[in-house]
Every structure is written in structure tokens, then in C-alpha cells.
Length: 120
Image (cartoon, rainbow, N blue to C red; front, side):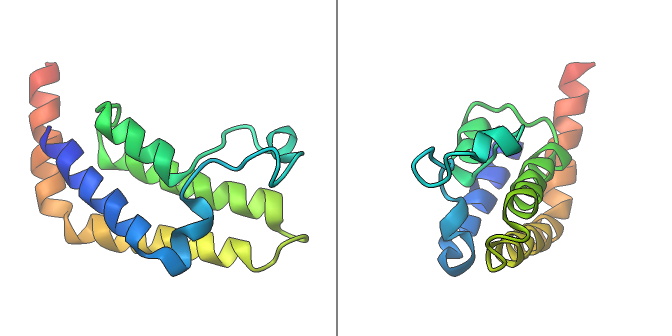
């Protein structure tokens, strides 16, 4: 629960960075990008991440960061060469996430240690 609380706070703070996060708040729709799922094998967005946090699917901050990284990767893969303004926003979102993870590194380490201890 401790890890989920920290990660939920981080995802909420990411969503509040609306000037950066607004394109990544929810899944990309077929209407917005009909060929998106033909190009992107692992779609990811902040609403999906929040749902995974609530279901306590993340066992580490690295797993959480990977999903935020996936948003950035997907933004580059789909938009490079067609929507050049989008990938830099995704990069910025990942950078903000990294800063927040760093700010919370001690609490995250304690929470992750608790999960590892219970799993053994």
C-alpha cells in the first residue's frame, strides 16, 4: 500500500502538469489516430498507469517508470516525422517523472523493501 500511495501521488502530480501531460492523459482513440495500434504494440497513458497503481500492479518504482517511459517511446515511434511537437512533451513528462521519483527515492526504497520482505 505504501508504494501505491507514493506512485499514485506521483501520477496525480504528472497529470497536473497539464501543459506537458494533456496529450497523454487517456488512451489514444481510433478516431484521433486510426493507425495507432498498427504502429504501437504497447499503448500506455496516465489513466492506465493510475489504474495499475490502484490495482497495486507495480512492485517497484522501476516498473512504474517503465510505463511512463513507454509513453515517451510510443510518442516518438508514432509521431517522429509527422507530429514533431509531441515527442518533446513526452520526453518532458518522463523527465518530470524522474525528478519526482528522485524526490521520493528514500520513501520508495522503504516501500519496495517492505514488498520484497513480504514476498519472501
